Amino acid sequence: MSASQEVKSGVSGALIFDLMGTCTNWSASVVAALKKQCANTPLILPRLQSNEDLTRFASAWRAGFFREIHQRFQNGEPQEDIDITHRRVLDQLLSEKDMSVTTDIWGDDIRTILVQSWHHQNAWIDAVAGLKRLKKDYFVVVLANGTTRLQLDLVYSSQLSFHALFSSQLLGFTKPDPKMYQKVLELLNLEAKECIMVAAHAYDLRAAAKIGIKTAYIHRTTEDPEEDMQQVRSECDIFVSGTDGSTSCGLNELADILCSPSNNASRLDLED
Image 1 (cartoon, rainbow, N blue to C red):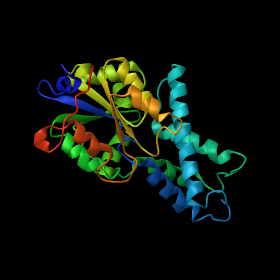
Image 2: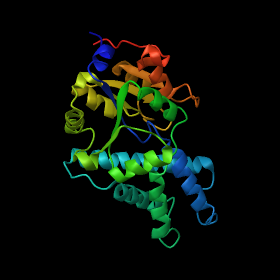
Image 3: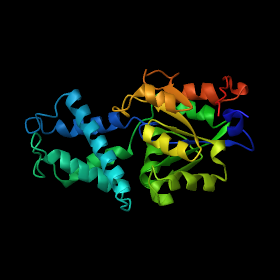
Image 4: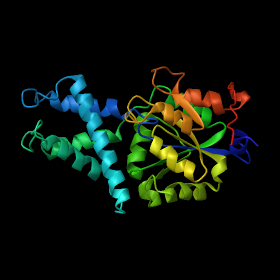
């Protein structure tokens, strides 16, 4: 039996989504928040004036966050509130020699506003419509690191609609811990072969694949800058481009692949 037939067996299969970066454009939100605060301190923050400067800073913030959570996982440390991690990385970046932004320049109130910008993001242009189509054939759920409040804020601000939200805070594990993926299968009462993990992060899909979950990679401009996309393509069951800025790419293209003919889409059989 093909993998797509397996996924669609029973009442329904499930598409398990990463959220930030995969479905939402965190960069636009964070850059906008940085730009607003920098407008009030143009002479004090000369290194954060152009859009390129702001985008680089936001990307460094995101990369620092990933380093932190992966290091905690590798060290066997307990997970912490994502806002605490974001704040610590922000403080580190602002204190670097080429920045030298003290709390006198950007105090606690401004830094709190910047951390909160991670809670309010727009969906990628293809995501809302793509998810709507996918929900007709599958359970669509979120499985992501972070707090439940973060997930609630993100789906509210992005207008994305899921059947359920599973955070690392709620489940008590952190991706890429295999227990995180096993727990969501248990809660969904589904087998690994009935599910597809959908993410813009190769590490996430590699971890899911190790316990038998099928994988769909959504290539986004903001994610996995150090990954070899040809290698990622070869590792995943489905590889979808979500980088051209059109409504037809990303999750709409995934719906073209996975949805039934009644939803005006073709089906791709994934070979085991």
